[in-house]
Image (cartoon, rainbow, N blue to C red; front, side, top):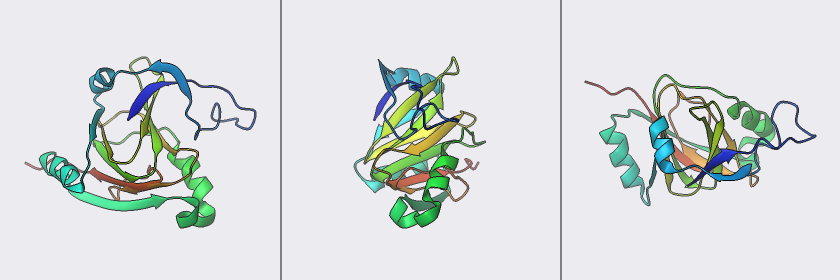
Amino acid sequence: MKSYWYDNVPSPRSVTVKGDQRKDHDSGHPVDPAYLSKLGVLYQHCPTIDAVDEIATERSYKNRDEIIVSPEKMGPVYEDKVKMFFHEHLHEDEEIRYVLDGEGFFDVRGADDEWVRIRLTKEDLIILPAGIYHRFTTDSNNVRHASSSTTLVARLTDREIAYQGHATI
């Protein structure tokens, strides 16, 4: 995982997003994981699915699915889906993502409403708190495989596992 302030470099090809969303957009100003933690964003490297399952059990997640976001797997809808995933949104429940393969970016709103870009790679796990504005995009390799809740839309490319759910009492 690598986190930094999103650079917002403009691109002549884009009118809605400043620059190609799949580029690094690394401002050169890193964001400390302690800052992410203050936002409620948690990160952990998990070398096994068992480690992810343990976290999901501890947090009482109930739903799980797996998705591959790539031009090969999604066909002609791929570009539209990637654009849709990049629309800023939030969820009423926390969201957990685990990358099984590939790379991609989650952007989250910082305390001063600026974007923090978080690059996730294989075996990275991220937990986003309920109510945080975020968006997702693949990197320039255009592939991510992920597992996630069936109630969520945003996914990375290649392979990712994600859970979402309410804690039960």
